[in-house]
Image (cartoon, rainbow, N blue to C red):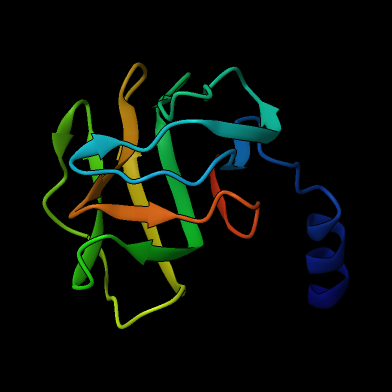
Length: 142
């Protein structure tokens, strides 16, 4: 009886009502700037724009994931900060040390947000994400 109930409940799971998936539309260098010029691949819930701002349409717990190839104009530390409502979140920094060529960076964030809160990725230290659609930034209401 227990296994049958679990199977029935699994079929009742609904897809997220708020979700976006985007990739970079161009390669460019960011130095303490909101990473913008996104190409939206999937968008439900009117929550994300090409300029790189996710705006929470309803309160809840959200998950965000980011990965892409990067190079760095300074050939050193490269990092991306999560910004909440225009200020650095203070944890969850996406970090890598550039040693030449392209290298993959990824980060994940699970956070409780209120309606109207914003999340952005801010590139630091002259980071240059690959604009050839190798990576994705996604987020959804859990």
